[in-house]
Image (cartoon, rainbow, N blue to C red; front, side, top):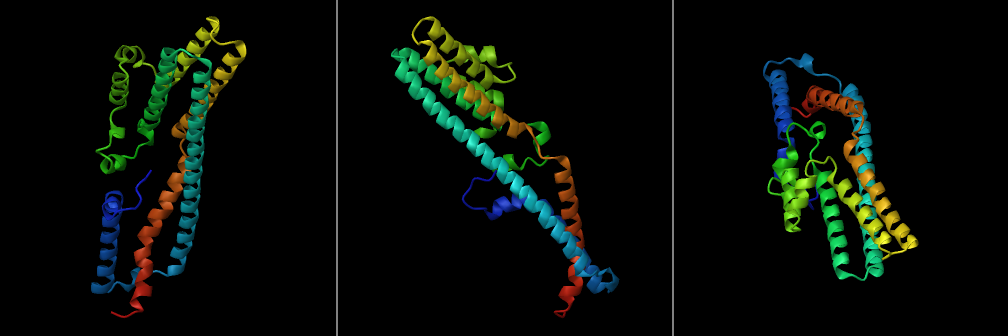
Length: 256
């Protein structure tokens, strides 16, 4: 996703250089053949191409709507994680007077949020384009580090390197971290530091974080139907290929 305030020419070139070069070559060849070899029969009416353009517009519009829906759902889910985290933090501090317990619980929660962030940014092989455009654009960003390296740095900053060694082989480290928070809450209940109602309120907030995390993972791991990508790509390529032939007649009306 592009997050810059404007789309620079450099970024446009990185993303579109392949299509720009191919289209330029195709158009140049068509014009050269039409003008110098006088193969006027290669010119086709514009109306059929315009019909294909209409189909392209529908497909592109549909994909834009789907992309925005996924973006908006992701924004709502992450906003839910933020609000639930605030509520959980305020409730835990109000219930637990021990500053060391507060600090340990909140540090684990901060670690959980950052681990989840890194997991959601982790590259999925089947969902990554061969060109790896995102790495060309933000190659200097810490977010494109290898997942294990980024997670290890996080645990090192929290001075919990020994915990990293225990959890680094788990498939879902964020899930494991949140599970440990449940165990801490249950332990506080058994020690009579919190009562049943307070334990219930805290576990409900943790359960809500599980639901929100699952929603984020659903968006990350569920692709759009392949036929949407396939047919839109076919129509776009067909439209780009036929457009120079259709423009020959229209542009020749302006004269040499």
